Image (tube, rainbow, N blue to C red; front, side, top):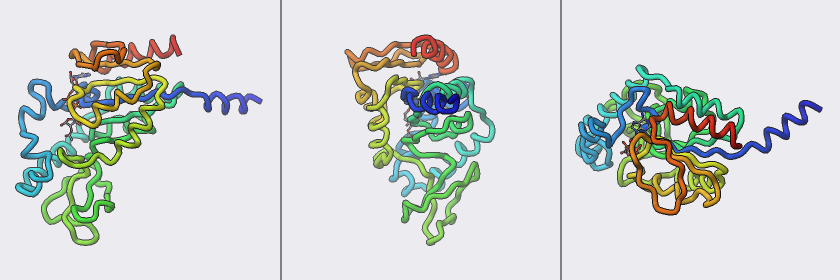
Length: 241
Ligand code: OAD
């Protein structure tokens, strides 16, 4: 009888959908992009994050992502990542992330959809279905797939399609609670996902800066960093849902 009740309880968990951006990992020591001193202050998008950049200077692009991949060895999930993973006990937590790091997974989150790719994977430049797990190792010119084509980072560059967006739209439209953490909402189509959360569901945004949200969207703003903001969110969820 007890077992049966547990199964039923598991079936009625609410969908907690969380869209994360670079600010989620900032307190782990990974730079954001658009804050002052962020990555796009040090590099130009056009030089390292477009297909044209890879054509023009593949070494620079590979080095840029090799350095970011290697950094994963030196960072740990922060308390915010851990809180989101713990919330899986109470909710069906689905994370949609723009981040290419693996900190949500390392914190224990089971459902993580990477919109902009993953640093720990590489793929063939000619056979995009040939995707390889490489952990935090570097890739270099001359490293090829099993069919002989150069490998590239498994990252969505500016100007490229975002294959996971349809799945992300579907997840967002089924949210019972929708939370946005640490993104400037400057990059589409990711930023447009907030429009798919149903009007009646509670919506939260956690960010130390004030983020522009289309009017009438009814977001509750927690103007804090991710760690403190996630603590506040957890308390609210436990009290109200
Ligand atoms: P941004 O750098 O544009 O925005 C980071 C957001 O995090 C800002 O709103 C900051 O206020 C906030 N932030 C800073 N510190 C924080 C903290 N400790 N806790 C919570 N929030 C904090 O990064 P994204 O919005 O993620 O794409 O950028 C989106 C995409 O643009 C990235 O995925 C990347 C980038 O170019 C590609 O490279 C394809």
